[in-house]
Amino acid sequence: MKKYSIPSAVVLLITIVGLFSFNNPDERYFEITKNLDIFATLFKEVNAYYVDEVNPNKLIKTGIDAMLASLDPYTNYIPEDDIEDYRTMTTGQYGGIGAIIGHRNDKNVIMMPYEGFPAHKAGLKIGDEILKVNDVDVTGKNTSDISQLLKGQANTKLEVTIQRYGENKTRKIEIMREKITIDNVPYYGKVTNDVGYIKLSDFTTGAGKEVKKALDQLKKDGATKIILDLRNNPGGLLNEAVNVSNVFIQQGSEVVSTKGKVTDWNKTYKALNQPADTEIPLAVLTSRRSASAAEIVSGVIQDYDRGVLVGEKTFGKGLVQATRPLTYNSQLKITTAKYYIPSGRCIQAINYSQRNEDGSAGVVPDSLKSEFSTNNGRKVYDGGGVDPDDEVEPAIPAPITISLMSKGLLFEYALLYHHNHEKIADARDFKLTDEEYSEFKEWLKDKDYDYTTKVEKTIEALTKFAKTEKYYDNIKSEIADLESKVAHNKEKDLVEFADEVKSVLEDRIVEQYYLMRGNFESAFDDDVQLQKAIEVLHNNQEYNSLLAVSPN
Image 1 (cartoon, rainbow, N blue to C red):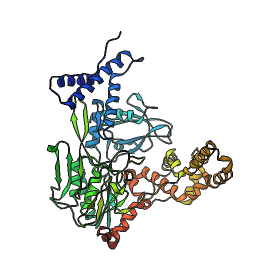
Image 2: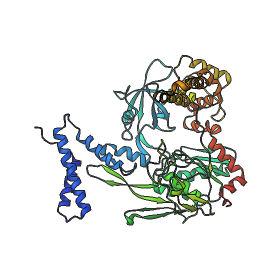
Image 3: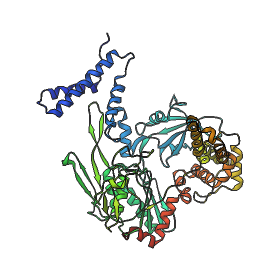
Image 4: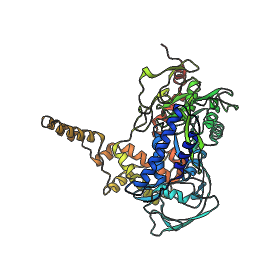
């Protein structure tokens, strides 16, 4: 019989059992001891007798992950191998080349080199296919593995072998890694003569300072109104949520309080610094993917009636996590409290089953919500997420646009366009001509971009159920009529949705020339939520009415 191979996690569990056995435990501690004992002996039996060899580390991690998943989605075990990734996520810093890589058309390519960082300075461009990192062939590898190869200690060299679009020969490019600090504010600028725009994508160290710096510069450039874009911001550090809020609210104002099981950890966070501006008209853009710290800021702005929220209901994550050290350099990220914004409401979704497909807060019955009030007396509610003052749904792309994007054809054509055109107009002014769009349609003729619309899928499902339940013969003529009416035609869709397809293609082309800046500026005109925020800021009556108490 083979010998037992017990990993450190099980040794730790057995040690805990031993410690408990020396106490005089109450019923709760007896149950803990009993179940830890069962777990340890169960693992030994599986390890000894299971038909195939088991990986102790993998098996234990699976058990730990399943146990923590039964609590909430944010309490996680972080093994030693993942500590660096976690540190990058919370600090925004890592050693590497400063580029986003992705998978397009069965190739691993540079998706975006950050301006001023090693990849950009070494000459890497969007679309460069990565073939080797040093002497390691990375064709066929997943992007996370390649990312790990590209990362490393600052001031160390690596060599990347690439294939550039339109070239026959490969290139070898030497890059010196640097300490990369990802900006929390990847872009700021004016969207009109008087409206400044600040995109806040994360809440890592320095977020508050970056927002203040952007605001100060925009005001110097003539902005008298501000849009703070928190859409798709996943959150981050709690103290940075306080610092960002502090940019717009009075010193000493309460921002957020935390309440949990360990009462000594309960705390109220206030704005500690002098604000940058408490008067400038402010619109905050929110989406279903605005979470955690982003929800604190948007909730604070709403509770103090400091500005208007435009967009969608936020994600609904009102839980605070702390990291606790474990043995062997691993850590536990554990939910320790719920946070409450100034009105007293907690924006945490009531339970995790009431979620949309993307994980955001689902519909919560009014009977389960509690009513709160803003400074002006406006009614606001808890129950999951922060509701916008002016709800604006984002534009949903047509099926043909989604197909062209998902199959990488817009990206590929942008590479071709960039290869054939040395320069283009400024990012906000560039437009494809009708002739150029016709050339794009011609290029697509031998490309595979077929798709099935949701309506077509629904008819397929209806047909299946009708046959199963013996109704098909009675309604087959109606189904056939529906199929003929909704059957899509790719060439026809390229004409019917030309404005939309052209707009997205223009975005992909512009980023080839202007990188991250172009990525933002090219999309401004077609951003319905951004345009609504501009409209509200330019209409004093509408702006003030959104912040006023609604008549009963």
